[in-house]
Image (tube, rainbow, N blue to C red):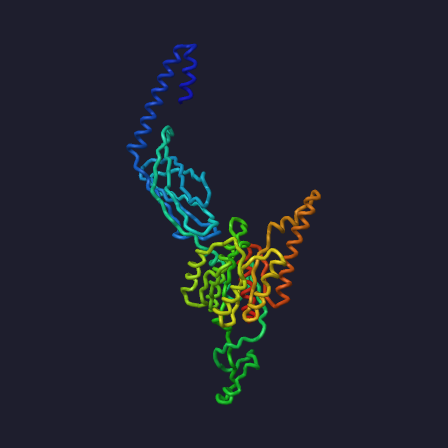
Length: 428
């Protein structure tokens, strides 16, 4: 309408009659704007706006947030909704367009993926609403400031609920692991039935009862498992928005949940150049929550980890033979050789499983097509580093140390598979 008014004003320089029409159109536009303003700001009631989200978010996972808006009027409106997201997400242009239907609630869902642990500050919700005329826009601000905590990835626990059934899991299914040896945790004496192992016959009970009796055994329980997390400088490396430390923390959380389901005792140790957290192994129902609270606070440093100090702490604090799952990162064979004496010393008293990371960027470079001489050099160096990762596994196997080399994304499933494998083989 304003554009038509401008055109008529220009034409009025040549034909004076157009000046009257320009004034008339301008007057109509003013009256409509005034009516629109009166309708939006005087008659219209403010809609109620509320943000629904959990009090804590899961790090590295997709978390759902919902904005609920209730239109209290019998007229529909066009609206633009702006939610002030936490600064950690680095999203400055977030908005959603919608229509506020008369006398109805609308839900506007969206998702966020935090990549850092800590407190996230959500700000206000701003709503810009317009009537059918669209001449005036009214801003409605809802005070919805809220602080939520981003914890290690507790949402992954739901994906591995079946892991305690005794199968070794794959991403798309499960497979059975052949059981080696014989469990020696006695459960009961029962009468022999067809199919029972003759080697389990209890001859003393058979003589007393007069019927053939056998010993019944069950899987050993209450074994100690410690997750040890290296917080050194190499764990600061980022992959897909998360640091290697965050991947290790998320895997530890899932593993502790499964261990408690298997009725094993789970503990936690963190270290860098100094000792960090040490939670004694326990199968108390609150142990998992206790581990979550400690994992929430862990941060990486920029110094080399002290494996000698770790060995001394393990010798002094952990008296019973246990499964120690060490999350660390080794980029070269020379880096391993510096720490190998301490790893061998730990492995003499405990079952040690070293979990370290595969560099996916180096794998991409190694498989990239070489177009010039520089690409050949880069490809060769990348293949050399990837080959050293395999040499690290061979070197650890030489001294009877179990290992898992995994990409960061597959770390949880691979570490969990290895634990279930060792459990099934009764290696603990």
